[in-house]
Image (cartoon, rainbow, N blue to C red; front, top):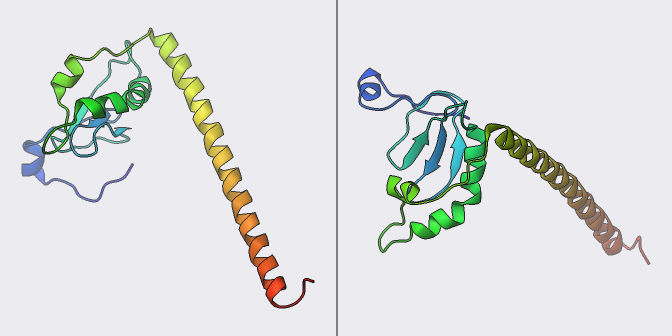
Length: 148
C-alpha cells in the first residue's frame, strides 16, 4: 500500500516491474506472508510474484488460499540455516483451484467474515477502553475516599 524508495532507470532496467494486482508471497525469513500489489512495484528475490489470468483465477482467491496454506508452506521451509521455500515448493504442492464463480463466492464470503471480525474487534476495543476508564474512575474514587 506504500513505498519509501524507488529505483533509478539503471536499477529498474535490472529488475522486474510487477503490475498492480500481482499476488506476492515471501519465501525467506518471514515465510508465507502474502499481499496483493496495489500499484506496480519491484521487489527482492525473497518474494515470489504471481500474475493471475483473470479469466481463470482471482488474485484475491489465490492470496486467501496461500494464507490458508501458510503453516504448511512454513513447515516445508524449515532448514538448518535460514528457513526458506522456492518455486519447487509450489511445483510439488497441490492447491485447490475451483471455477472462477466458486472463487468469487469464496472471496465474497471470506471478505464478509473478515469485515465482521474487524467490526467485532473495534467493538471489543471500545468496550475494553470503557472498562479501563471505569476502573480508573473507581480507583480514583476509592483512594480519594469517595467510595465507602
